[in-house]
Image (tube, rainbow, N blue to C red):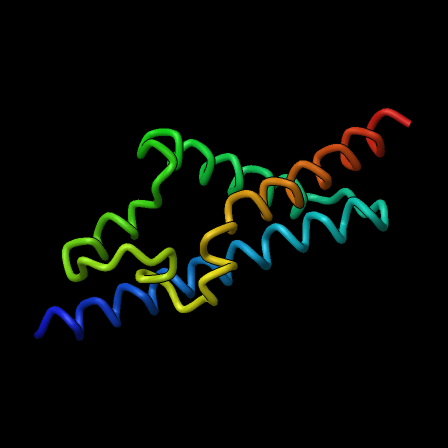
Length: 112
């Protein structure tokens, strides 16, 4: 298998993981907005917490990115994922704000 093929497979995997976490984050946001705090909100919170721990352990770099670096010498923000450059570049900032908003709403719902 060539390096290019391996990079394509890593990019597909990374994109699938990204889509999965979009579902997790936006379900949590939706659920807290409509005040449907159920078991799935807590599962989402656990998955997001696990993702944060992984990013902390890997110094804010996704481990999939580290794998992709083996097969590419690109310095573009989206070399390892099928996203537009601007979204890949600001991904952590954008989703951190969304998760923080969901957490604020969750705390409000729990204590009001």
